[in-house]
Image 1 (cartoon, rainbow, N blue to C red):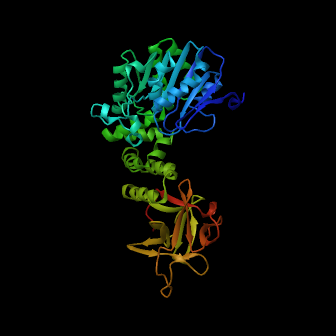
Image 2 (tube, rainbow, N blue to C red):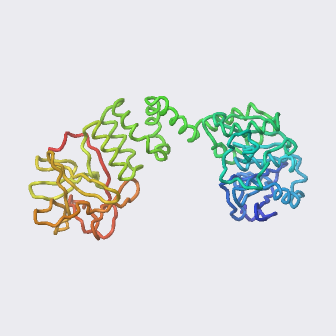
Image 3 (cartoon, rainbow, N blue to C red):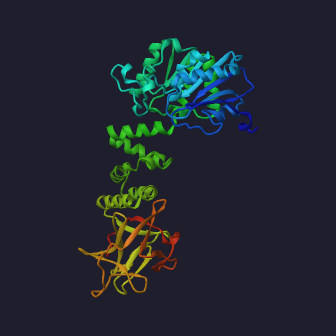
Length: 447
């Protein structure tokens, strides 16, 4: 069924929009979107699960982070009350800003049940016992005294809160003062991300069924199952362990990283600590394997920093690596740059890259001397002769090309590693052969 064809806008003003979706069941779901939701045609919070299950739904959407002004909701109710009048069971449903509205207007709508994720009670600090209630950037003069009162609440209230989150527990506690019979279901290690734990049609139907049965034990068991493998919970556990017990935390991080790269992609700052732990706990080869597996999460500067750390920890070779998995090498015998698997003679040296902002210089390190390289008259890369004009060694521009790779551009041409081993700087565009990254190789230092 084309669900947009079955929905219609039943109320619309300067603050809110209300969408109606008829269903074939004995209850109606009244949903309120959070502050991230925006007006988009007939979309509303939990629309897809509700429509997939053919649930009758009344979706309230705020046109700004306005915490659903009471006068607008009341006007909307007068306009749409006939749509839900015949449903004996009315379930208010929302998260964060939406859960504030679900609880506050539960009495107005005659709700029999309220499902509220990480609910809020008020944004007005004047009524919050000296506690900053949060979200102050969205506080407006007309929100004064917006706290939820006992007379406004109807039905059985179910609150899902991470009891470790002090701010959410403050709001939950104020709701409990107004509604002592409300039931709190703990969602530990999730913080203010509770709503997304229960996204999906089957989860919604399970919550509704257990709430209608007033089966708190089933709700608690279901909640524990749902949050156990939720990425946010895992990420918070790892971050807390790293802070309090670094060895345990980094061991867990490395263990989970190979299964799910999400945590490290969002928190690349943990890579240096993970590399250090990996060297000490598992050895040099495992540390380099770890770096190579996750370097694509880093930009060129981050890769260079990690490689510098690897060199300090393992004395490995740091390579400027091509898309072929080969390294840029400079041969002193014929003064040419090529790319090969490794140095094969005493006159070959790995080429390094020094980055300063978006600019970079190629160099070779021979003994204690760093010699910079430049684009020569043959469009190759070599040590410039004494007579050459080389005012600025940082003649290359670094251009990120995605997945941890980057291109090197000199004037109007890109550096390229050709399949046969040749390095040339004459390409007008950057494709696969023009992509580089920092590599690490567990070999003795270059001869």
